[in-house]
Length: 424
Image 1 (cartoon, rainbow, N blue to C red):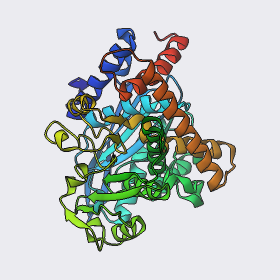
Image 2: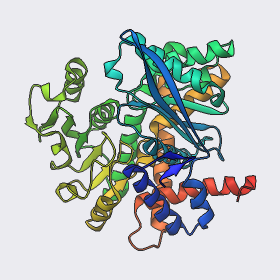
Image 3: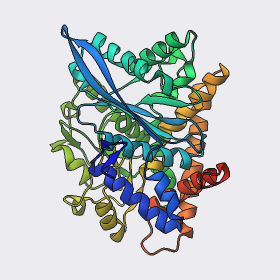
Image 4: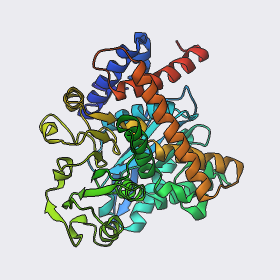
């Protein structure tokens, strides 16, 4: 795919996503029309957002990709990043359609982005950018149309500005149009750690299935120590695992005897650099991928594990906290060497499942307690993990992977919805 509606979409990430999608269509024996539908978004919206920065107007480029809504409203995050491309956004929206389908929630897939380094903006400028994005896209959003959430470079505060702007234009409070909002503005406390928690529930479930025991005593390495990585480390530790490595762009902290996760989180959030943790060996950022560990959680960015470094990975279970952290070439190598990969559309779905639970609360103007919400989230993640493992055991195709099983399940649900609607 080189263009959509005349707009360039060149992206290695998109190429890899479509390659993976095509493989799943072939493995599942689906008709080619299913690939034709899912390989292209239903709608791509490009907008210009003027913001006064340091006294002069800067025009920022923004997108909203609405990929497929056969199962329900478009759902996906908004990314603020200086290097994001439309191709990346399409890939992410495609994965959201599949992730939401696999999760069993009533959503289609979407994704948004603005090409900006949010760290370079003052708080007021960032607020104006957030509000400008909503003003530009207001007619394409809504609690039963398209429901954004945070992604890389955005957070609950930005969602608060966005839901406020949307509500102002609508003339009434409409909390269900954005999710992962602050608790005081119709959010839920579980959302802060939902993705990382879901990653570890998936890891625990697969460890029991593959090795007969859960995470208790297992060595875990976390590559990427943002929100997902921090909370994955936290919940892994809570479940009895030994977190032996954590890493961000400042470096890797490695301690075979185990890292004090609470201290590492405190240091990271205070200094912005996990390498400032007082203890352990200080290694290069990517060395967390190569340490001796039973479980590796790549929780940084896409294409982290690739053909150039895959032979150095030692873990036997990889649980993808990030979107697309393993390239197809690397996955083929790992599969041939007996490594199991829990794919992103299953492993990191805790965030969007929690967004669904928050959306349900908002639509009904009611709330669940934190414990009740976390219990609901955990059960959905565990059940979905077991469904994928069952499908994996059913697949008779040579060299089929857990990702194939997850994608086949996801495609089956979307395909049935499209057939029932009369699209195919």
